[in-house]
Structures are given as structure tokens and as C-alpha cells.
Image (cartoon, rainbow, N blue to C red; front, side, top):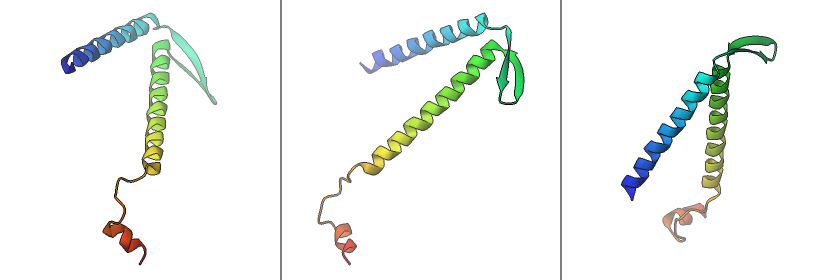
Length: 90
């Protein structure tokens, strides 16, 4: 089962890489992009890649924030009556 999942991951990465390569090769023309007060001319593929990286970073930061909130709100597995609880009352 574990070997099948590893093979599936390798195939998925290969397919995604192939799709990214095709998109990059099809979008080499230059485009003008307005970024606040700047006008930047860059290949369309670079703009797509930059957008991908920004979206990935936002997703990672959001997931990390959600996980940290979940860890803080989880009740501890420490049984009641431990020495830690006894010290809290003193």
C-alpha cells in the first residue's frame, strides 16, 4: 500500500510538472503589468509563476495559522489530579 502511494505521488508530480512546462512554453510573450505606481513588462509565464508563488505562500500561512489555533484550543491529555494541577491552587 505504501509503495503504491509513493508511485502515485511521483506520477502526480510528473503530470503537474509537465502541465507547468506546457503553460510556460505557451506563455512566453511579454505583457505589461501595473503594480501600484509601477508598470512592469515581463513574460506572461513569469507573471503566472509569481502569482502561483504568492498564492502558495498565502495558503501555507493560512494553514499554519489554522493549525496553531487548533492546537491552542485543544484540551490537554494530562489526567486530572496530577502534581501540575495541585501546584495551580497554591
